[in-house]
Length: 269
Image (cartoon, rainbow, N blue to C red; front, side, top):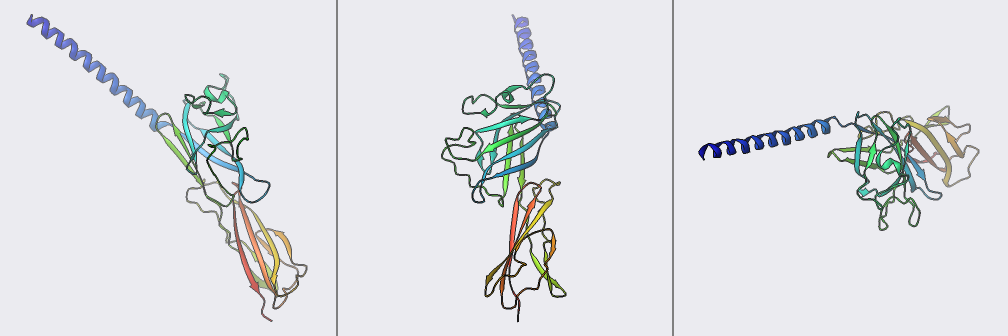
């Protein structure tokens, strides 16, 4: 009897050890796969509403640099959970499009068990719609107010089934407007404007410098009033004395986000 008990105990212990080793191996594999998971949030393209400066939607570019499929559980934009969106895959592998990429638009409201599966080494574009209901592809819940404009910070979070979080902030550029003179001719100078590097993809640059020159008070506008483009612009006429000019600079980054600054300038008589 003692021998039977000893053998049973040894067998139970061996099963325990095997089960523990199996669990430990699974945890180590999960931890290893989690550490290797590689997803990049590359860029965005905002869609401006027909009126005002708020956005009607935007497109975000994702790239999987992983050799395995990445399962995305959820996405958050400026603190709001994304529910619906369109998916465009830039290149399809020979095995086709797995998982939720089959659905276009993808919607968690119709299948909460479904995750967005990004194929290995894939490149996708996600389109979000900020229009109010009953727009078909509205991306957030009905009681969500997402007043995003093109000069505001955009923060995007992606959460995967392995427990990773990938975050990217898109920061609007900073416009700095200056006015100088060469032989009394005014020079509009936006060369000190810049793109903040904190939280922004390193390939973001300033693409456009747009100016508007108008009279604010105290005189009539000469032919220099109007719209101009360029980092530095030389006006062709002198400014009128005792006239206050309102000069606006609007800079646009390669992410299509904008920053503005203005100058109130009065030429002394």
